[in-house]
View (cartoon, rainbow, N blue to C red):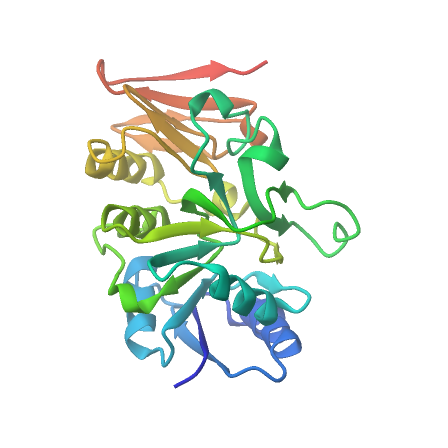
Amino acid sequence: MSEFSIVCCISKPDVFDECLLTSAKEVGRGYDWEIVPILNTNNIYSASGALNVGIDASKSDIVIFAHQDIRLLDNWFEILRSLIAQMPEDWGILGCAGIGADFGRKDVGAWGGAVEGSTVAVGSVWESDESLPEPPYWDGIKELTRIHCADECLFVLNKKTGLRFDTQFTGFHFYGVDICLQARAAAWGCFGAHLPVVHYGKYSASVVGDKKYWTFLRFLHNKWKLRFPEMLGTHMHWAPNELTSYISLGLSSAGMRLEMKAMGIQKARFTTDKLQHFIEDEV
């Protein structure tokens, strides 16, 4: 048994080696951890399928799911160990970024849901090495805080929950949001806190986004809207009769393509009662 398992779906081995693996070796000296690499250079797996393989192969009850372009910072494993000691026994998910569970739609701003980042957002994520001397781009509450769901760039699973990823999410979006909602629906707690990382692929979804992004967002909403009538993620939210995405990519659904500007200057909104798509300017 290892104390920690890091599971990563790898499409670019050079990026994995340079970012996640190298940083884990740097900050992980003296800790009992393992890397569980799921090689996916030929797109054999969806993200959910690959990470389920990782769950089965992992040798720890503390499983860290991280994108290949993540760099762990500072005394990362000691921070994680301390946070786990603070959490209740019924914890399920711990994320490095999220939106506080106490906040609702009125608190959501133009990008990722933070009108007042330090009071609505939770966690710390930098976008580059050069930005490290500055506050992180995701600069939220540092203390352990209950969240709606964790961002997929890095989150930690308590494997004792028995949770697994829903393989109906066949692309590379919303598998993490879904497992958080699975946890909450089964009364396992979802938390966020200061788990400092650099995510070099901040806009990777915008560049290589799955054309079915919007379709899977609607699928997620249909799956959970009755159990969770309001839900806020780091790049989307829903409230009764409204579903909104802040991801800046060309979205394709039912033959309609929606081009969105970066940083949520525009947003795509789907009104669930009239089944209409439209773009709403924020400026």
